[in-house]
Amino acid sequence: MTKMKALAVTKLGQKAELMEIERPKIDENSVIIKTAYSGVSIGTEMWIAEGRRSDYGQPPFVNGYQASGTIVEVGEKGEGQFEEGDLVTVFCRGAHSEYVKAEVGLVHKVAKKESLKACAMFVQPSVAANAWNMAGVKTGDVVYIAGQGLTGQCAAQLARLRGAYVAASDISADRIERSRAYCADWTIDASKEQAVAAFKERFPDGADVSAESTGFEKLLDDAMTACKNRGTFVFLGWYPDRTSFYFNTPHMKQLNALFPCFIGERPGRRDPTRRVGFAEHPAADLS
Image (cartoon, rainbow, N blue to C red; front, side, top):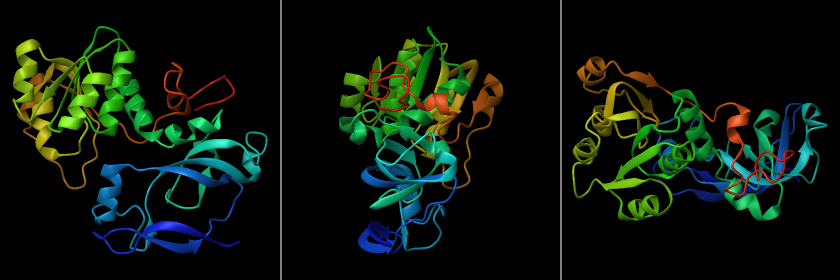
């Protein structure tokens, strides 16, 4: 069988279409999986589908970068680590396909079938973990996060697990409700009040670590303003164009600026807390 079904972007800015494409071919440093679930990264995939990112070139192409399923082929460098039938989650290209190919170093075992759905969304918490590893978030820190999308919510949860006090803002009622219930210690509805003014009223010295997670340039100035002098600012979102901000804010505050990219080192993609259904035993990375 050389063909497979995939959800492809056939025209920029238009709906994806189900079509038949070539099935990926194994090489020595990869595995092929039969996809059970593919995770949707709304922001990044929107930029790509609209042509504001060129990760996959011109249409037609298959969007998405995270999936889970069952290994059906193992390359030479994966032998001894993985075998056919293993349940795994992977970082890959073109995740919304019947079969996907992933590099061996970006494959993680999943301990049980029931975890495949959750594990197909492992990239967002991994991105957040990478950011906090770089920022050194620790117990007692005050963390402010602008935006409670997938990555912002994961960042809030992980910062709390590290012992930080987390304040987060958003304009979406649904996101505010979810964040208030599961993610942040204090959630600010930015559709009803100026978020940074509210934050600074409670924390006049500012946040030890402040992050902008939406990718919307207009929020950068506010998120930098929320940071304390000599604090740390994290560019947690992705910005499709040239990005600008009011230079004097980070300059006068002498902020440290971090640009976390990708999902970090392998240990940061694991779940040492065992609280979200990832690692069930030491031999299983994510599940």
